[in-house]
Image 1: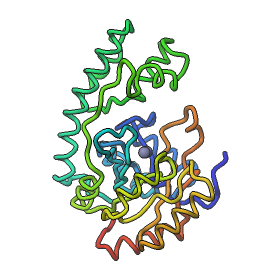
Image 2: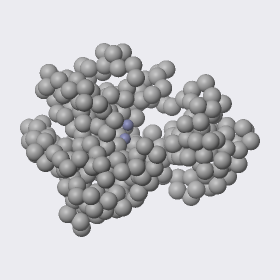
Image 3: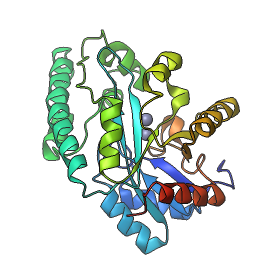
Length: 288
Ligand SMILES: [Zn+2]
Ligand SMILES: [Zn+2]
């Protein structure tokens, strides 16, 4: 296990409520088994895993931070700006409204993509059925790519995107966008802090940054499993100059591909987590 000894709080993980492979309970059990004290459950555009995660955390003595990762963006931009909400109230009506609108638009989009892949001659029936059986589940492009791979229609996950799912490819359907500013507002309305997720992964950083830097962020995910040391230095400086908060997490999705053993590989030390709680309290944000 490559887990750094100093990581106490991994504040960015995904469960089966979005595109993770472990149920919220399994995720918390795994966090407990590798010695994490705190885990943030931050599913893509879903809060559904939080309750079960918190209950499992209470049972196992792991503190579970209720979170969410909102996919935000704007017209004509493909890769999203991910807004991480931490310490959000899972019962928030503002959040529920947004998620409901997103769910409807995602449902329509997923069906459209399934149709387009069907038109490519692929048998999508099994995936369509599992989707119909649990309509609240987020069916994203990673699910579709994994399905195409499992059926042998493509040689791997990446080929599914390159050949079919990306913009300009036959099964591409544009997303409705939530502007980052709206995402931040809704996370604030839900009582949480709004953090820019994995800025090091944003390819056109200068352009994106000039657009988002004046938004009411609370912080940046400075510590991230795919950030280099120089990324960490760069984003720590940004956080300091804005008087923001640094968060950290692995973005664990389950043990596959580049995510193997990733849980707990990035995050905050116990001391850093304590500081984060203090800064949150100063902003009127507390644990739900
Ligand atoms: Zn993300
Ligand atoms: Zn994520």
